[in-house]
Length: 228
Image (cartoon, rainbow, N blue to C red; front, side, top):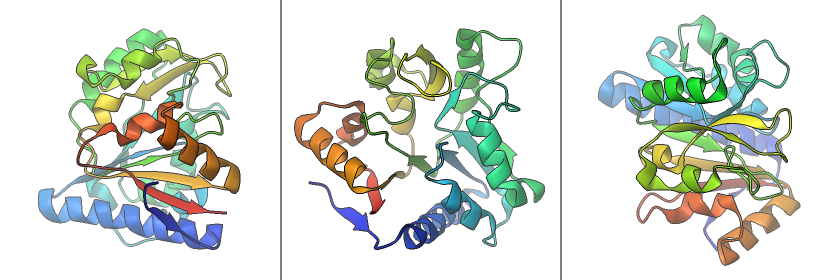
């Protein structure tokens, strides 16, 4: 089993995750005068993002991207972009930028093409991933119609659209590919609860879930951060 950064409480976990993201962003600013992070949606990372937004940073040099997005406007309650903009509002008010995936007036395929062109220019300093109890991460759902393409690093696409009947909110999704994460300087997998830890351990032992694909890189292995 891979090494896990364990914390006794979720509050402690979220505080340290915020510090880890900030460290990655500051390193990017120090080295390249700019930094970027790809963030997951969902309720689990919200406290970490809120803590991150309170930390000192030259936010005008930071760009946030999305790990994945539901195909809904950013005014919709299910929008990952909306959650990130709200939770990180102090950072955006201080000049941070956002790379959306959903664009109005486009089909999922058209939005994916547009996002792919934008995201191809970014090598994220850190990507913050989550995991569902079914073993999905990003929008790599086990029943997604283009799962194989999403996980195939030879596709050379950073963003694709896919449809997954089991996905909450909407089955139509936009997602980073495994190829896109080949360019991330660090990947952090954030999970909470005993059920998800057991599911991850099983996935890594048996390779029976999409999350296992995160660990296919021969050198850059994801950091696993967990609290009960």
